[in-house]
Length: 251
Ligand SMILES: Nc1ncnc2c1ncn2[C@@H]1O[C@H](COP(=O)(O)OP(=O)(O)OP(=O)(O)O)[C@@H](O)[C@H]1O
Image (cartoon, rainbow, N blue to C red):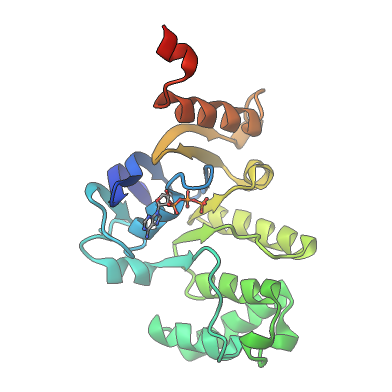
């Protein structure tokens, strides 16, 4: 059974069909890239999978839990790095990671070890006791990455993992994500960055208009067509599918 399973998922906001029949499976050991244009339904899908919102229809499983029936258990078992979210302005990185550890019922010693390891890995040791409000966007992003992994989850959902990071830290985070997935975990990355997806993902799913329009394995070097070409072709085809063009209207 896959680490993440999505079958016939639908979610509308009023008249907007944000997710409209989404289907895919992600196994342990995969670094899965979720690629799609703005408004394709990526964040909505992640929010359902992490028990933050209820879908209108469909069946979803994450580590064999049902995020709709048991959102608390799902959230306990996964790591989540939401899109454009900042750590609390009134806490320091050390206090915030301690807080996350308490919420996740972790041994304080383990949290202290993880805090030190992440501060060292991403280079924010000197900022561990500085209020987040006094950190740069990139430094805050590093803390958000650390909170997603502090409990060493088997499945991690990450929205735009490299946003605001300098090139050196981007390389470190990319290497870490690759090694984390290879350690029998599933890493699910939503991104617009096709080059990064091509570089680090084992497989990508391309989303347009609330559906998965194609999937591609990137192991064994992929095939001749670049991921960008596949992306542009499939997204364009999907976007023109329901739009009557002048030519089609005339025929
Ligand atoms: N809370 C909401 N209320 C109403 N409409 C929403 C809400 N959240 C998302 N939508 C709409 O649902 C659609 C899908 O949005 P979603 O955020 O899932 O896309 P996305 O693929 O994550 O986009 P992006 O790449 O821009 O972050 C969009 O048309 C968006 O405007």
